[in-house]
Image (cartoon, rainbow, N blue to C red; front, side, top):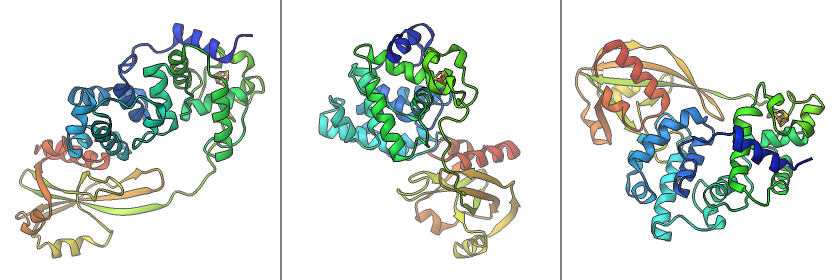
Length: 347
Ligand code: SF4
């Protein structure tokens, strides 16, 4: 029987994806796509990728941009540390490598936000270097194909998967093979309802032959996700709303948000900032899910008699709603502004 890699390579040439906008592109563009694809699906990524490339066509343009501009292009993609790291890495590429993308896998690994699998993907796809990738999709394919038990996030299981990923590498056609693994995970060996009948390696897949496809890979051990509550204050004056910049580190670091207070903190906030309220309206509450906790958001729309002078001095900005939607804002704030825009048509 042909090897795992030769079957995948053959399959990719005939059935794989060949029209993704970053395929066959420079290391910079492959890198950008790899970072965007972490935790995010291809269909979501494509419009973000195209907008990003239009504004920052190369690493020098990205390095010269402000973090604010980069995050505005990332707004809505989530996991904003990815965007901040991308920007920092671009600046290091310019300052330490004269704007040339680092030539070796080891140097790639030193850049912020680039781990073992991302460095391998850039090396394999853009430079045809024989390196093994192991992202979430590939872990699933290998765990099923080889019948590996245990949660793939567990260190021992992950180490074993890395060993197998390296052992299975082909002697040639590494870029096609790497793309094949990605395509297999995204289109055939999917999380739910995999298409085993159309799989190029079903003849010796352990999960398939032992009818354990649904059980592998083992799910992450359940942990109760803590819940937090916050009140988001949408301070409005005329057709403008106020946003404040989040501290550089922590959740939504460097993004523009509505002021956020604890459940009982609204009155104090208004008093401390000398705000005179003309109208107050509670908007529909909703929940935003982070990796480690859930945030239950209670939005309150407050129509102010005037803009508070003190807050303007503290780096807050007032923007028309339409303008705010183009700024570096996180998804829940975007959601609120869109609701506001739809209900009041004030942009
Ligand atoms: Fe995945 Fe099914 Fe192929 Fe096995 S046969 S690798 S479970 S798609």
